[in-house]
Image (cartoon, rainbow, N blue to C red; front, side):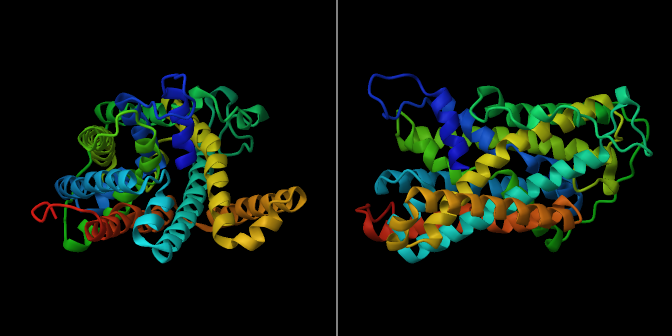
Length: 383
C-alpha cells in the first residue's frame, strides 16, 4: 500500500521550492491514513459482528484492539525517525536485522497477494449479484450491468478522483446500510451468544479492516513536522474515525440481517436495488483502479526478494527486465484469479489476510520497539 500512499502524498502535499522535501500537512496525513484503511474489509464487518457473538462483544474487541493499533502506528513512526528509512521493510531491516527484514518482505508479498485475491473475489460477488433494472436484467439474462463500456477499466491510476474513491465508497456504504436499517419492513430476532473463541474470531477482520500500518511509514516520512506528539494525534484521529465507520457499518448491518448476514454485506441486499447498485459500482471501480497498484508493489518487492545483487545487475538490462516484469505480472494475475474463483466467499480470504496483517500490526512493531530499546540511549524510567 506504500505506492498508493505515495501517490496520495504527492496530491496532498504543498508545493515547495525544494523538490523532494517532506511537506505533507497533518490533515493530509490523517486523510491518507483513512484512505489506506477504509476498503474492502468494510464489507465483512456486519458478518464479523455476528461471528463475535453480538454487538457488545464485537465493540469491546474493537476497542481493545484499538490500543494495539494506535500503539503500533506510534512505534513505527518512532522507528522510522531513528532508522531514517522511509519504507516498512527498510525500517524493520535496519532496526531488527536482515533476517527479520527478509521475513517482513515475505509477509509483505503474501499480504499483497491475498489482498489481490480479495479484490477479485469482491468484484466477482458484485457481478454475480448485480441486476440492472434499466436493462431489465433478471435470472434468465446473461449481460451484466455495464459490460457495454470497456473503458471503465482504463481510467488513469494517477487521477485524484480515484485516489479518494475508496473513502467515498466506504462512507456511502455506511450511510446506505444505516438508511436501509431504518427502512426495513421485517424485524430480526437477535440471538447473541459470545464465547472466548467467538471473540478471537473477529480479530482477523479487524486487522484487515484497520490495515494502514504498511503505508504509515511512507506517510510519516513525508510529513513536514515529524514531532512524535503530532504523529500520535494523527494516528489517534485516523483510527477513531475508522472505528466510527466500521462500527456503524457492522452495527446496522448486523441489526438489519441478524445471523443471516452474508460475509459480504452487499450480498445480503437484493440485486435490483438502485442505491445498492451504486454502492456495488463504487466499490467495484475503486477496487479495479487499486488492484494494479497492489500488483505493482507486490511485483517490485518480489523482485527484491528473489534476486540477489549479482543477478539483479543482469536482470536490470532492458530485455531481461521487461521479460521478468511481464512474467511476474501475468503469473500474479492468473494465480490470483484462479484462487478467487475457487474461494467460496470473502470471509475465507479475509481470515488469511487478517492473520498476515497481524504481523504488521502486532509482531513487527513489537520487535522494532524491543530492538530500539536495546540500542537507543533512553532514560531507564522510560525504558
